[in-house]
Length: 221
Image 1: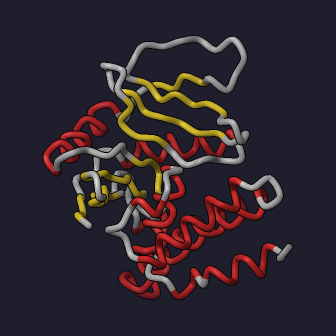
Image 2: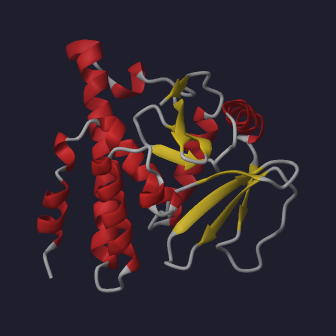
């Protein structure tokens, strides 16, 4: 079996535009068959499909998860470099990037529209379900903005306390990764996160969600 470095090198992520990297991360987050997304470029579909296949195989599970982790680190790195180029030599990440400066990216799929919330440094924080129309997708963003400061129900802990909606449900999936889903006041799931190896990372992502949900920046892909 190839080593992690050999498999990672075969993806050639460094030469991909950041928009493609975000789409790959979003497809893996959704855990859906990339081949059904015929509106997305083939290189993106192939990469997402390969990562999911690696994660689904018990012999390559750790390699697939590490590649996915490195992919998201590369997204953050590329976004940081873009900010550095825009702000010159005096660039300072804490000073130049303010809270609530994330962006909603609306993505057209074969079944309709979905959105991802991306943090101010390019990390995909959560992904919505697919909406049948663009208008309903935009309404989903408005609902996320309304409920995005909800409390956390930590289902990863024993004897956790149920809290009323809206809420973030943090849980452990069948692969042992920490995830969260944000539920509206009516119980509908507004968006779901990727998997995190550590609980603190998942809690940190929820905090980033709270800091980013009120952004009015929306991009249509």
